[in-house]
Length: 101
Image 1: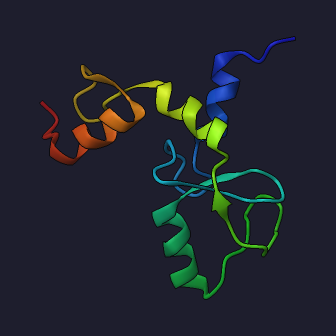
Image 2: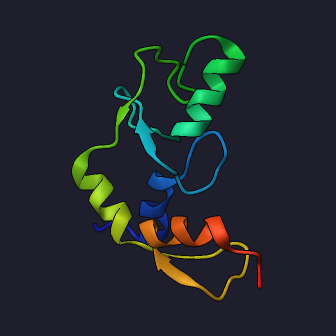
C-alpha cells in the first residue's frame, strides 16, 4: 500500500524544532532528521549529540541524496504570509526577506 503524502511529509520534520528541516542532517541509525542549526544548538547546550528518537550517539550524516531531491521538489507555503507557495529552496530564500505581508 502506498504511503499517503501527509505521512511522507513527516519524514521531513525536524525532531527538535518540529518545522520542515533546514540544511537537513540525518541520524544514521534511525533516519530521524534534524536541522543543521538545531543540531548545533543541541551540541552547544549538552556538549555532545544524542538522537532524541533512538539515543544513538553516532553523530549525524547528510540526508541521503535521493531523499533530499524529493524534499527539494516539494512545494511549501510561507508561514509568514501564507500566500506564497514555493519549492523548498525557493521558500528558504523567500523567508529571509519576508515581512509577513
